Image (cartoon, rainbow, N blue to C red; front, side):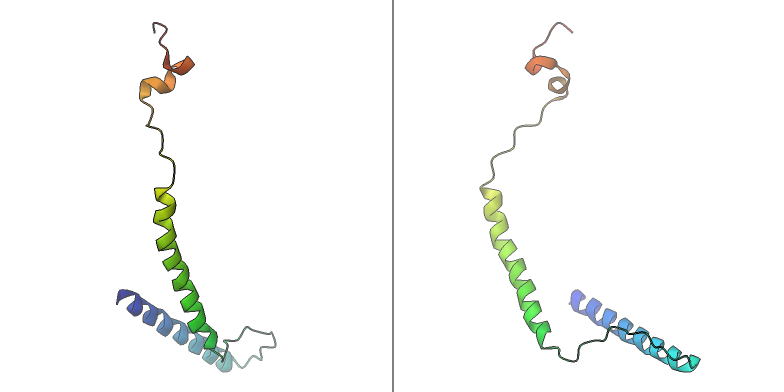
Length: 94
C-alpha cells in the first residue's frame, strides 16, 4: 500500500513538472529547435517488464537460500592474541 502511494505521488510530481516545463516554454516565446526524448505512446511493453522483474525477484528468493545453504562454513573468528602472534600462534615467552 505504501509503495503504491509513493508511486502515485512520484507520477503526480513528474506529470506536474512536465506541464510546468511545457507551459514555461510557450510563455517565453522561444522556439526550441533541439530534439528531446519523447514518452512512448505504446505502453504494451510495461506489463511484460513488470513480469520479468518480479520473476527475477522470485528466482532470487528461491536460489538465494539454496546457495547460502551449500556454502562452506566460515572459519571461527581469530581472537586478539592469535592475530598478533607469528608462527601459527606459538608463544615465545612474550
